[in-house]
Image: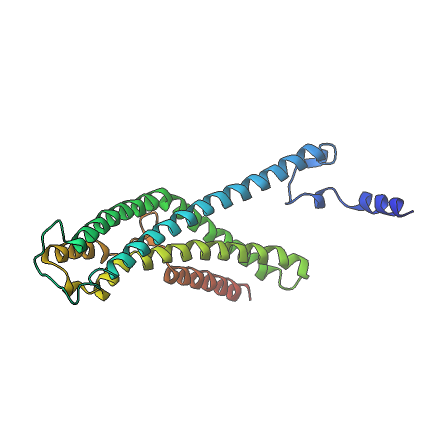
Length: 252
């Protein structure tokens, strides 16, 4: 009896509602339902997989760069701490451990800066496209929400979910870019906190070279025009809300 009820219920479900998204295939939709369903589910999986793969790669690269900046900053901050009692302004180059450590940090810092430039060049065009698409898609989803306010919850749930998902996706990308902005100046701040006055002249010259490179933070941009940061994300959300407010006022 339960199987008969299940089959009867299943048969009354429209074919279109079993797909992950709405499609238009004409009057032969039911005849070719299963090939269409396979195509829809494969397309949805491919889109989700590509999004997760690209974002995961971006997050991993950013965190690796931030970790390298943090390591360099930690090493620089500890230089000179053991020289308070036996400080020598002009030690031999071979015996100057602080100089050797600072020189190694300089080389590693240059490599990390080059790595951050590669991240920027790899993702700048992608983020320019994503930023424009999310702005357009988010505005359209918000307009759908405003137009369906007088209807049922089912008509609002879809556009609201899309709008929140796009805002969350943008926030995660801008958040990671903010990490790079903050961590890339750690070597500069670490040298300022270090006991640099207990180091040799040649070591201080290395410090100045590192500080000249670290004074300008590394950044991720969208099309070389918009710097990705939390402040920029707030501006994007504010602009999106202002567009929706203007549309709502025109609708009334």
